[in-house]
Image (cartoon, rainbow, N blue to C red):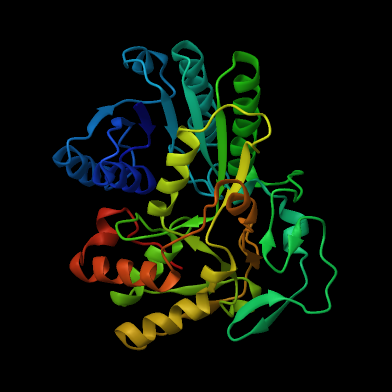
Length: 361
């Protein structure tokens, strides 16, 4: 099986490529990456040592794709994954749309030409901001949790946010590009007869992630805490109670194995949440407590001024993935945090290499 893996030198793409190579599945992996992210060259060198071929190319450029060989599947891990992208003055909105949407269209055209299947790694950020921001939450054990007597909107339960939750605007420019990519992928697959799977991921985390304040927060927080860099709890009264679940990208491999070998039955849902769920949910306050126990106490400043698009509690319910594919995360939160901490201790300049210097949490 020949697979084109986009964003191959990013965190998720490189971890998946490494996991595929280690699993001995016999898949031929061709990676492509524009290498624009600081630290990408480090991952490229690591993949080349594993025998993974990596091409330097930009998905926005048709000629970069025209020279690629035919494949059986495209697994799309490429994106500008920041919810603030295009709105924070650090990158243009046009560039965000070109990377996240135009790039998807180029890949779908390749799938049409090659008669290849398509897997899109999407995001929880396609879910509507306003109803998530209005969820009734209370603080318990240093973290927000849903109030016991609250009435939940459709698609929310104690297990988290499921696939039926609203995707009405606003969802952020980033979320909108991914939601549009999902729709186009499903339409291309239906129109031109190739399989499409959409995996909406929560927060992905693990060793070697290029952590920043606006993305890769688990990696950024642990690295910054260890190096005694300034950290801040932003918004929500500056308490650090906001909660996210996390998932290690290696846990995606089993799901991909099943999706890439499945038939084209219309009875199988094409769209799934893929996340760690309640078992891996953690607040920034709880993450700080973990870091304090591991590295020694480090003060965190309070900044109650809210940040655009931030939400108090986002935990995905991946129950459908369990029902349809018998898939569940295998790497627990404790193991993910430990892996990041070990990597951070071994790479004292990681924040510099990943372009995170000067950021504040």
